[in-house]
Length: 288
Image (tube, rainbow, N blue to C red; front, side, top):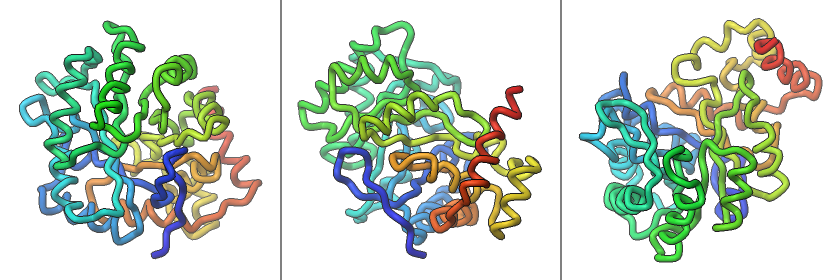
């Protein structure tokens, strides 16, 4: 298929209109490595060239970098591909915890460079603000790593508008990765600010999270609109995101080839203004 393309914020990098999140390939319930690589290759065949990962996408801290290594293996000798990774989360005994200390971020970046097999990471995102560490201190460390040539572009994840503005005083921000989907509009103010600034917005959980993606069709409104386009509810949910803003690059996760192929089909959908307006009301209906 021919996928539409978008610019990755102000970086000048052109990627497919839809990316792929690698997390499901490396956490609980993950496929075999062979099937995981098959899923990545299916994404490539659909025109997907942006792959999102993190050093913490693994079962626990004994296998940090699992997803980075898998993507590096699957995407070897693919110069058109952008692998975006993140640092700032840790997985002690499988738990999700934050570590934004400068010494941790430096080590995490070095480990990611080795896992990906690159001299510089194209897009490195600070994974999540650590309440134990001043935000500016963590971002400042990532900015230092950029000046040292280990990072090309700097991004943020799980941030507020205030944190985005604070970070912009320290470094040029290329991307923001926050949760956003039909059912959760909590990052709308951040998205609006990113659009004003020309910063790429990578909505994670575009299908309402790993545990809910297959069930979104149970929403009557979404299911009815999907039938009218002869599309899946997942495709409609991603198409809605694409029409929400020109800076959006959805990154649906997938552990099976058939699922990422389905998601990629959203690139060719054009929703009517009436359907977009109706879909906009799903989140309000849920929170009412």
